[in-house]
Image 1: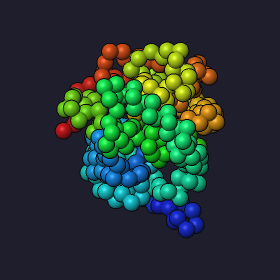
Image 2: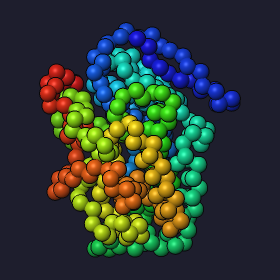
Image 3: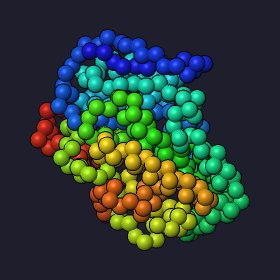
Image 4: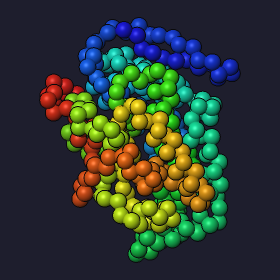
Length: 325
């Protein structure tokens, strides 16, 4: 079998398909969902505070995907494509497609990146900075830190690239579908760093692949840490308090619904920008639900840690056939 690996000539913006011949392991024949993921380095190795992550965090995390027969489309920063493919060569499952990306490709193909200056302008505005001071008082009721204040802020308040990376998810899903990389009835998003984020505590890894019978057939399934309350629909209230609500690391649903959801997502982003609000994807999902609740199935996990979606939605009938190292 061959890996599909698209090599891009940045100067001409033409993509030329080349292949790497690798022994076929046909264990994904019955897969009915394709997972989309992405890695693009936005310089997190240089960030302050607890949100600092270097490239190895993501590449090492992605290795776990290669131990499963997930059918995937992977958008990879072309500066690190060789590292990823080197890992893939030794994977027992050859059902991943790799698309190299860079800043030029993102600017030309992903809508979220075309409006990043809106996010940047909002973050640099005096009005926004004043709101952030109020948010810090909520985060630190016993006293706002007076030194290295930036180290105590969340990335969605500091880095427009972080917000745009998150907003790119639905655009990358739509790109993969529109360009024929997805042939399954269901499509899902799963973060590139999922395993190092949700299983760094040593918790049990998924033991099987996704069971689409657990997903809603006519809606996109999202995981939440609590129920939505009326205050959540107020953009400024949500930005001010910054409550954790949606789990943006995974969502999945019918492939045919993804393009419609992308259009809804864009509408909500534009409305937030007009209100002087920039935030990460979980804030946008709130307004998508406010506008079109029939598009979204909300799976609530109250009084729990962050739900491990790849385990929650795994196929119990096949648990045990695959136990990764």
